[in-house]
Image (tube, rainbow, N blue to C red; front, side):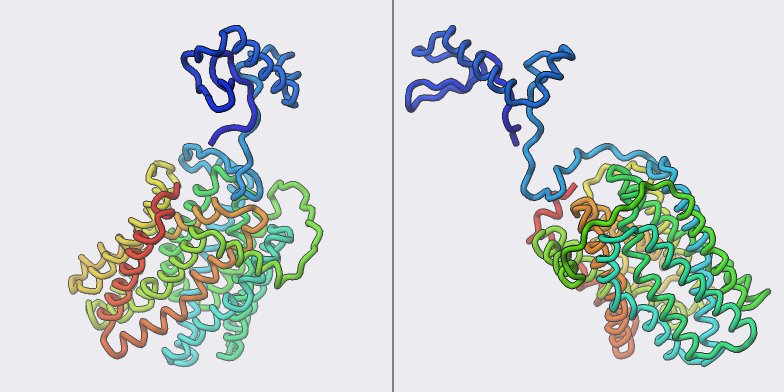
Length: 490
């Protein structure tokens, strides 16, 4: 793509040879005298300098005309908020260079550890109260319902309001709910109905916090270090997924379930403190000219208009429905297929988290030179193949290795989709697009669990998992053959 305007050096083109003859540099045509060509090029140079707003400043600085008077690159029609920056080489853990991200990240590490402790304790508490696996499933579903109800609205709020304030409010609400759970559980006044209500409150806080946090990263680190921030966030999530449940088990054995809720409430103080310590420019809200429904429609229209963005969103939805329910089936594999019991189940979960952690750290190190599109295709394909192999495995040690590989491929895919999606999204639409991403990633999980559970009941867990992985392979094969933009995406 050429630049608009710019001076032409003598003898490099632009003169005409009569009404129908052109020349493009090199030897001058016979009917054009050399001095005439020089005068024509000189006039072009003068006109260009007169119409270039930076010409005078460049002349005063002593910059040669041949290099100084070049107009900026032409604005592309598909870049609504300005031309995209040229890709830069990622720095290892470059996001941690930014103070705002560092204080937020430290708080997130502590808060996520508390969240995993509470999640582990919550399942134990439901079994103590009801001794029913069905009611445990209902609690999980109630946690996901707010994602379906509020996530798209949350994306609109993130685009129109101060993101830090939204996250602060969500964290304070979650802290209050965890504290109430700790008090009620510790005093023996907790009931199943109250637990459902408080879980719904926690899910609502997450429905607003998650898409806002995803779109907030670019404000903390800038576009260049955004992929690194996403990778570090994935690493933190999976590191705490290993540490949190282990701590919860020890705390439950020594101090009871209520102590896990109390620990989670305290952990929220860390991330709230980090948010308050940030040094951000004063937020100035844009004038509101459209309704919330129209804003949501605008975000959905943008996704529909960009085939690559649309493909990424549907691909993450396909994974959530077909392959990600493997985590729900792990208790069945531990008990009925591999016959390793509850201790073995803990090891299977830890293996998945370990592989995911390694992938997050690898992405954050900035050493990957594979274009994101090819990384997504390769990671998705490998994820499906590894899950099929796990479904066929009857050896515990091999299953641990396969689950570690599955966790590795899953995070490579998810973090790369997230980064590519945000790199293509205009800043003014980022919150809404990320809310759709969260909607598909988390909101489709109950549907995936339903289909996997139904197949597992009638055909067995290995068949259900292998079937879902096979469908994912067919989907990625269709994407490769019909969406060439994904393979070419950087």
